[in-house]
Image (tube, rainbow, N blue to C red; front, side, top):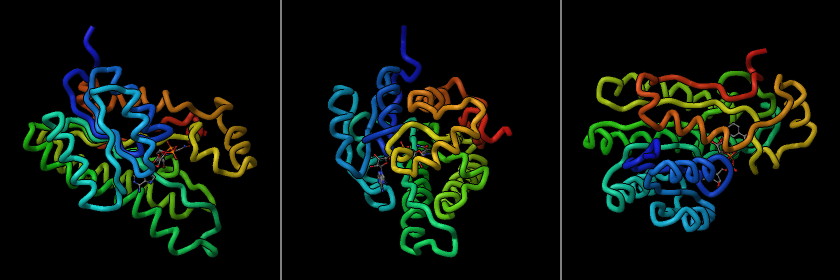
Length: 246
Ligand SMILES: NC(=O)c1ccc[n+]([C@@H]2O[C@H](COP(=O)([O-])OP(=O)(O)OC[C@H]3O[C@@H](n4cnc5c(N)ncnc54)[C@H](O)[C@@H]3O)[C@@H](O)[C@H]2O)c1
């Protein structure tokens, strides 16, 4: 049986841990050749255990030249670029808006919003030259509903959601699809770093009474990356256990 991404070349950012790691592992199992990119260095282990169809790349997604070099590596190593998962992100800490730190705000926007913009901006010329592609951006349910004390994070994820729609409309007739998904709380380092009372309150308010698993995110990313979602572009898919349905 052929994989659902057989012959496709994918780049995944934030690939050293959490959702990005799960996405890389799933894409490789489905036949993709993958550039696993991260700032942390942990992408090296992820790529090594994935095998020869996966190469690591270290970058800061907020740096334009590094993002371009990451995408160029996909072309030089694997011969093209069909899928880009702009997944790297940081949470930035919690404080009410009146006490929020200006530098934290700027960094959260730089990684979460500018990083996604740069990924799309550099991927599109390559995808156009190659006949199309699928861009999958990781937003958050914080792009849809408010999360108190996270003004930078909510702003950045709202930006991801609207950049997704804007770029999708621009390239819809040129074979490039752009979508984002909006996870609820998922069991990764990002959530492990938040106050326990906060997470307990999120779980209590969630209809499914649990947080999600990175493999559940990888399943959705796979669908959006693959040709199975060929009529889906410009949308945001909530994957939150029903949290925002209430
Ligand atoms: N965990 C959740 O509950 C949750 C919910 C909604 C959205 N998200 C989003 O999902 C994405 C993945 O987060 P996660 O939960 O897997 O967290 P995580 O902390 O486990 O993984 C994030 C990865 O991004 C990398 N990274 C951070 N800054 C980077 C940079 N400047 N350049 C390159 N890589 C960088 C980190 O090194 C890390 O490996 C993020 O965009 C996050 O905002 C997470």
